[in-house]
Every structure is written in C-alpha cells, then in structure tokens.
Amino acid sequence: MDVLLHGYEVNPPTWFYLSSILILAVYLRFNRWWSLRNLDLLLILGASPGLLFLRETEEAWRNVGYAWLFVSSCLFLIRLLLDPLLQRRPYAGQNMNPQGLAFLCLAAFAFIMTLAITKAPPESTQRTVNEAGNLLTRTASESPAGVTEAKDSEAEPQATAVEPQEALTAEVTPGPAAAVIAAPVGWVFDHLAARILAIIGHAAVIIGLWFVGRNLFADSSLGMGMATLYLLLPCTAYNVGEFNHVLPAALIVWAFVSYRRPIISGILLGFACGTMYFPVLLLPLWAAFYGKKGAGRFAIALVAVAVVLAGSIALTSTDSDSFVSRTFGTVDFAVLAFFDGAPETGFWRASDFYSSYRLPIIVSYFIMLTTMTILPRRRTVETLLWQSAAAIVGAQLWLTQQGGVYLLWYLPLMLMIMFRPRLMQVSFADDPVQLPNTARSNSPEVGGLTNSRAGSQQLFR
Image 1 (cartoon, rainbow, N blue to C red):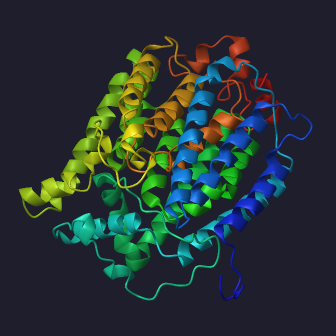
Image 2: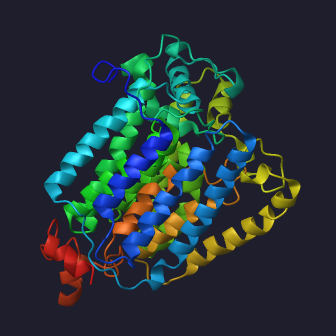
Image 3: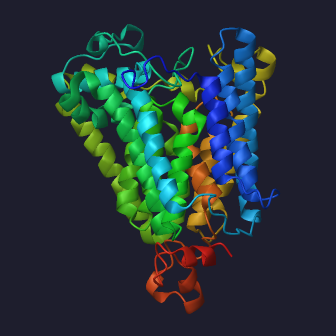
C-alpha cells in the first residue's frame, strides 16, 4: 500500500467522516426520513465517536469515550427490547444496484485487509498466536505481563491508513479455544499468523452475513448490503486486527446460518464459548429455541467440543500443571467478578459512586436473561436473533474491563436485525414440508423464494 500510495494516510477522524458520508449515501432512505432503517443506521454510526475519544491522550476525553459507549450500549439494548413490537418491516434496499454494491464490498475488503497487514497486530492477537505456538511446541505458557513478541521482532511495515493514534488495550483475555483454532494458521504462516488470522476472521463474518441474506432473508442483495456495511463502519477499521473479538462473532453468525442443524450450531457455539465468556450467556436462549426436538443434540455437540478442546490441550501439554495453565490460565476470571472492584480502565473506573450501581445492573441483566429464556413459548429465528443480540449488548453494561468498547461482539447481529424481514414463520420446531401454503410462501427456505427479490419483498410485508 505504501508503494502504491507513498505518503498517503487517513487518520481515524478522517476515516470516520469519509465512511459516514459513504454509508449515508448508500444506505440512508432519503425518501422516508422517519423509518426504522434510518434509526438503526444512526444508532450504529453514533457509537463510533466514542472509539475516537478513547484514542485521545487526555484522561478526561477517554472518560467521555467510555461514557459515550456506555450510553450507546443502553440505546442499543432499548432498541433490541423494542424489536418484537416493531411489526412492520417494509422492504428497504440500498441506494446502489447489486453489481455496484459487490464492487464496493470487494474494494472495502481490500482496503481494510491491507490495513490489517500493514499495521502491527494488537497485543491480544499476538498473545493468542504465541499461545498457539506454545501448544505446538509443548512449552509452558507465559503470563500476559511477560508475553514477548519474538515472532514480530522484525521491523514492522509502516501503517498507511486509519491507524489509531493510540492502540486500545484489550482487557478481556481470550479462552483456550482461540489458541487451538489459531494453531494451524500459526504453523503454516509463522510470523504472519496474527495478520492472517485477522483477515480470516473478518472474511468469515462477511461471508456468513452474505449466506444469512441469501438463505435466511431470501435475498442475496441484503446479504451483500450487510457485508459491505460491516466493512465500511469505522469500528471495523479501528479494531481490524482484533482476532479474538472477531472470532466469536463469526462463529455466532455461522450458527445462525446453520440454525436448522442443532449439532453444527452447537459445535460453532461451543468453540465460541471457548474463545470468550459472553457466548456462554447465549446457550440457554439457543437451547430454548431448539426445545425438545433439538436441545439434546445441541447439548451433545457442546459437550463434544469441550472434550475435543480438552483433549487437544492435554495432548500438547507436558504435565498436569501445564494442562491447567493452558485451560484456565489464559482466562481472566476478573472479568466475571460481580463485586465492586477497581478496574484499570472502563466506565466503572470513574469513581466508587458510579460503581455502586453495578450490582443492580447485574441483577437486572440476569432477570432479563431468565425472562428471555422462558418467554415467549413459541421460538422463531426472529426471536432468537434479537434475544442473542440483547444478551451480548447487556453483558457489556456491567463489564468492568472496558465495558461497551467491544462493538465487534454484536455488530454482525445488529446488522442482521437492521436488514432482516419478517421471520415469524421461520423456526426449528416447524417442519418446512408441513407448513401451510400461506406460511410456505413466506418462508425463505421453501416455496422457491430463495435468492429472490420478490420473495424478500413478501417477507418484509
């Protein structure tokens, strides 16, 4: 990139303005200002300034950034809880034909992935690659404070675009599954593994979004629209190298792609739970979605993944102490602490006065999670989608380590909710072959409407 555009650089604020203008030009409904599409678009764009404030050197501006993201998370949660009441879903295409949208998606992917290659990988991603190397060589794991970047000791290429002024420190450490998944890539690509993993993670998200639009929403142009918007949003560029935060989101997206196969979705969610803590909160919702017909197979898949992960770590460990260290040592259990601690960064660090309100938020969150697990009795993909997003967004409200910062955890799900049609007839309990004719005409996987704009418009009625 530096060879083609020598001396060209786009700083984070400039990228925010340019990408916002481009996003509004392509996705904003100018003929209908008061629409749900416009509201969702402004909500998602409105969170990006908070990330810019976090890159300021002054502590006061960083506190503004944490407060901004905390309020944005509250607005996201309110929007998700109101989603069942928004019955009308009028069809809202993009202000660009599918061919132009595909070109824009490829161009944005090339630009963002070039950034992932040219800039230094985040410390959290490099730590995962080092842990993957330790698994392959059967050596003891180093503590996070003592992690060295030996594989990246060579001179780093100069970043060329959208490089933040100050890299955000990832306080939430990944679980053992991230290292197990990264091990084959680290073995093949060696010192480029951290960058390659970031590219693979984002590619998995955008391909999964396209399949969701094609198979679930019955319109491949909607999938292309979600994938392109994911790449254009500033929060994606700002955190382009955060493989540990992109990986669980990609696994959750593909779980929705394969929602009719409880074993596959259970495997995907099992690996997601092994990478970060928050996918564990989704398991009761997915088990309730599958009900008696599929919950057993879903649970068996989860147990199988746990056995595979434990076996992989056991085979690459020298002794029992090494096994325990690799299984639990990479997980920061302080992230799940429910007491009033003293976090180094984040919204709850401001003062003891603010942190005293954290316990009621935790209680309210688990009451909300329990209610969503019990109600409603009839589960559809539409219900599962907004409930899963609400569970992830709500978890950041009581997170001590940079709560609200991790937009990549739920960004793909928010885009799916933003673009989705009516999916009241799409559920695991209903057999597509036995659906009545009226329901069959509205189901994206039956009736010959897959990948059809006419079928998508029927779903949006």
